[in-house]
Length: 512
Image (cartoon, rainbow, N blue to C red; front, top):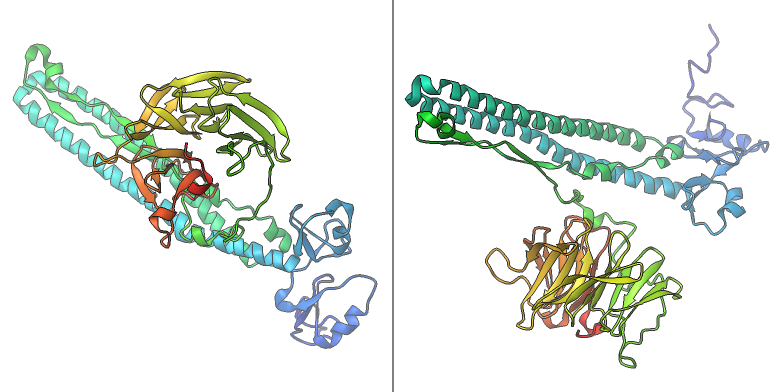
């Protein structure tokens, strides 16, 4: 009988050849029965890691010290490390987690991404792809309808209008071709993205079945890319308007074919996961805010002082602009050290402050009705209001400026400016009723929604970028109306389909 080889029977203990050994050495890569584990570990010439066979592959060698086992994961360096690495200067002050815990957390990320792709993103792209046949059918139906109208009108004109009909049919065909080309292009892009999503799903499933911590840890999510949906096409289909027959001006009077209009309408938001509110493991909601940095300033708040901070805006991750009741706007670093200061042009205190995309300071002057920009310490009034007084101000992601303004007769509105040019006025809802009773602070979220704190209404009013009301927030269900008084307002980086609002309670804000 031929001698048995390891290639013919690999699932045997390497030391005693007991079949179906339940243990495995992740360092030596050999199978062991329980009886031989002690003998194997007695070999002190190198390190060993014996685990149940179903958990094999979970042990990784240290990238820097191959003879050592990686038992920790450095969160700052994003690599598995051994105990020797953890005690080195290279990783001094770094945060470590158990390697098994790191693998477990990473697999949860994989599972979440897979679920999101399969349950949310992929179906959305499929839905978009399914709309193209419908659009093409509408295109064809519209073209047939117009062609019929051409022919019917042409029968009355007989031979004289034959050339005109053919010309206009040619125009329509050319429009259809352009329209179809645009539809086909976007359809191809959607299908290509679907293919990428399908590939990502397959790769995620493979990673979920792998215990190789190096491969799993190297995974980089592409879900954020897939969430950014492609533009939505808005098409004005051609229409035909017949005219009374006039042989001298046959072509003009036969009718006009409206030009093909194809516009792209951005979705204006990134898809939000169905379980977005419950998928923030790294940022749980807390009852008591955690203070990261406390900055001391020259401002003196109530009750001992009369110059509290009323406005704050970030210039960078290290510097913040601050404004109060006096005429000086101050820039501090995170250590509380003054960096520079700007005196308002009128001597009035700034009502609100903001920073533009280019890093310039903007402030509103309630009493002289101006919105001012500071460039290289030089103050330039960019907006002068008549009959309105500016309150809150913010710079948008597109570079525009949003200004909240009120009048003495209790009117309130939001105006979008590009430079000094008014682009949009937001004052009334679809029923003609005022959106705001006394707007104050303002912020734009990542979804491009415009969020305003309304002091008199004790509410936060949220409209989309076109000025259409999305909702009004009056506090948690358990909050009485009088106890909810939003002042300063901002939105965090998680805001997508729904703005995540943060506000300063009314009691901590001076009535300006």
